[in-house]
Image (tube, rainbow, N blue to C red; front, side, top):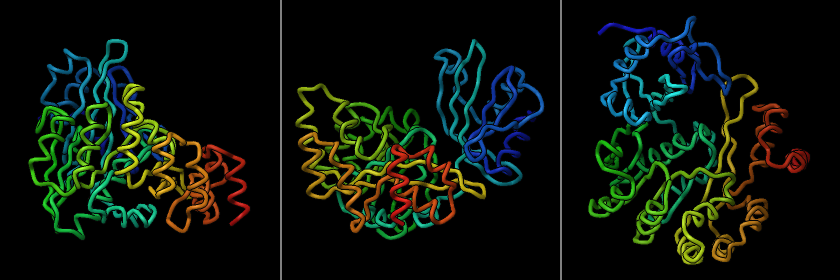
Length: 356
């Protein structure tokens, strides 16, 4: 196959540990390194360049993309003899095609390697319940879920079923049996895959994202029937997770959803990626663990009280985002200015630093 400049761009991105690559017809290619966009090529992409790039990415649904103007898919290509997985989003801008390409790390990193709260290992050892990872796009939610799945894979002889759109990390079965299902390829969608998964003798179910009421309802039902369910949610802090879940449903149904969620929720972690002082990224994590007090707040819709519970729950492994950022600052991993830009409450960040 004729090679485009895309291979050179991707090679440059991998050498610079870029998290994302952006290409578009008429645009200079860019890559995101440590949160900043940088040049990845010397000239704008042509239509021919883009066409060749799609071929290298293994895009099998070019006609669907042209018709629907949007397309998501996973890809695995070889660069300099090494296989690299990518998550690709195709779109149009001012009538011209463009692609946002997420680079997936070559291996699943452990909870310890990522610097995540050690209590996640205990939560991954649970036999049932619902655990959520929240945060904005690009905050490492999928990487955290993958680390928890790998923790289970390493330690437990169980059946893990994942439902993803698209599949990102590829797991190598160790102690666990793992079946990864991709929406649109292996199954028609999240909710349908979840219903079918209940007939596949699963112990653990990982859902790439809770994105609608039907999927949320199926996830809650799976947790209620004795399965451990792990998923992500696009929302702000950990305390907002329950409100976001309830918000998928009409007001008349929200009290029942809150009651069900209070029974099966094991925890919510919200995370941000902070720029390290010496380069790279560090995870700042806010963690809420479902104690009796937390369940009561969720049931009664008193989410405003959850922040105080997190502040005082350090002995259980809980932490606020400000406390996490303060620790990173104290360790010298993150500059104060960077921590300040990510802290919801600058005053609380200063207070946490003073207390260390």
